[in-house]
Structure formats: structure tokens, C-alpha cells
Amino acid sequence: MYYTAANIVLENKENIISNLLLWIKNTHPNRTDTLSKCDRDLRNVINAFINGLKFNNKEHIQFIVEEFYRNNTLQLQSTDVEVACYTMLRDQIIELCGGEIHANSESLQTINHIKYLYNELINQLVNGPVYTEMNVEKASFIAERCQRNWDYDNPVSIADYNSIIQSATTMPSKQNRQYYKLLVSTNKDFNRLCYSLAVDRTNPHFDQPIHRNGQVLAPMLMIFMPADESQIDDPFNDDFEKNFHISIGLSSGVAAHSAAMLGYKTGFCACAAWEELYTALNEQYNIPIPTWFRGLMLGIGNPIWEYSRHNVFVDNVLYNTDDSYDKIVDVKFVH
Image (cartoon, rainbow, N blue to C red; front, side):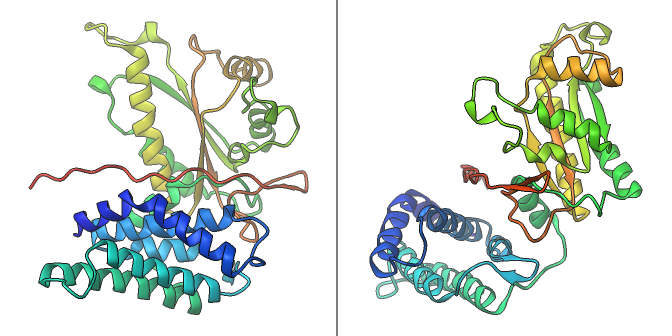
């Protein structure tokens, strides 16, 4: 694992992106009408290099290449600009890591791994991705990104539905107490009601019938609700709010990862008018109203492969959303 190189790239990430975007703007001004997509793609690719160095694998590179393809079709006009840009990226990373001229044996190993990641990126980008079997790493990449459109003709199977629920509800909690309740729906009208209230009343974006939280319209929707605190046998008077959030974090995270392992896409949503939502569910579906208006929703299903995962597709209307941010978690290793 090449931790030092990964940290060097992370520290210089913004400068690298600025330099490469300026190059694209000056040399290929007609390539795109906005550099925001180029910025997004560069961030994803650089993150894949960082993680590929940190964890000494190519899974991150493979997953990024798959993002460039949809329904086995390349979503780029061509790959010429990308190849040139990523070649410059490779060279900048190598120089930041000390360059080849004065490299010692340890530095050469790092440089060779950078070249290996670059070759995998270019070969698969140009010739098509090498689709790998589902594994723990690939499932985590899928669960990390939010899916916002769904294929209702290809629902979650009954066997997978049961497996996901079991994996979610057998995760640990403080003293194994039940701090949450789980509501699971495959009812499209129910999920549409939840979508209509998956809103932030303080944000003008949501003052429209179609908004970005399309993950809630999934064929399978899981809602993690607070349990009744008065019913919990807790002689230690532990912090209910803290343990509720920890419990649903563990449960929902495993649910999303399990769903991805089974081949599905997922999307989380914590944005909701929770009091309105729970009141509506009580009035229309006789769901008891919790004493605390908090929760978390997780959508699970198969995507519409023709669309980007960012696109919301509701009532035959396509709505494009902005991508989420990227994160690189700071990991310290003690050996």
C-alpha cells in the first residue's frame, strides 16, 4: 500500500484539477458547454487513483470506468481528450511523488503502481470496462452513490427482499435494545406519498411537484423510525437520540451494502418534513405516529439503465440533479 503517495495526491488535488480544467478550456473549448462535468469526472478519477494507491488495488479504477458507460454504451463523444487529460494527470502524480529520474527502489514501486492504475483506466475507457464479479469493494462503491430513477418492471425479488430486511434487523445496537422500528414498502402509491413529503420546507427547490429526492420512489423503500422510548427496558438511562442514530446507521448501512451485493442500486434520504410525513402515513395507512419526528429512508431497486443515476424520472418527466460531493476519509494505520 502506498499511503505517502496517496496523501500527496490528496493534498495537491485541487491544484491538479485547476491545471487540467484550464488545459481543457484552452485546448478544447468546444468539448463541452460546461466544465462542471469535467470537474466532476476529474474528481472521481483522482479519487480512484488515491484509493488505488492507498489500498493497492484497481477496483476503484474499474468502478469509475463503469460510470462512463451506461447500458454498455460509452457516454462520451470520444475518448481522445480524456486520454490526453489522464496522461497529464499520470505525469503530474509521478512528478509530485518525486519523479522517475532520481527514484529509489521504493519510489519506483510507487511509480509503477501509478502507471498500472493509469493503464487500467485508459485500456478500459477506450476498449470498454472489464465487468468484475460483485465483491465487497464494488458493493461499497455502489452503496456510496445515490440512485434516483427506477425500473418498476424489474422489482426486488421476494428472496432478496427478505435477505435485505434480515441483514438490516440483525445488526447490533446498544445492549441489543430496539431503538428503531422499520417500515418497508413495495407499494408505489405509498412511496409516492413519501416522495411528496421528502422535502425541506425551507428550500425553494422543493416548491415543485418533481424534485431531486427520487431515491424515495424506489420499488422497495425502507423507513427507519424511532421506537417508543417508554417501551425500552433501559436501567442505565442511556441517551436515546444518540443510540437511535447509531442503530439506524448500522442497520441502514448494512441494508444498502447487502442490496448492492445482490445487484441492486440504492439511495439514502434524510430530508423530509417528518411530522407531516408521519401524520400522513397515520391518516392514510394507519401507521402509528412516533413520539419523535426523525427518521431515515433508503430506496432499493433496479435502475433505468438509459439514464444517469443523477436523473429523476417522474410522470415521464426527466429532471437532472447535481452530483453529490466526493469524500476521501482520513485513515491512519497502526501496525
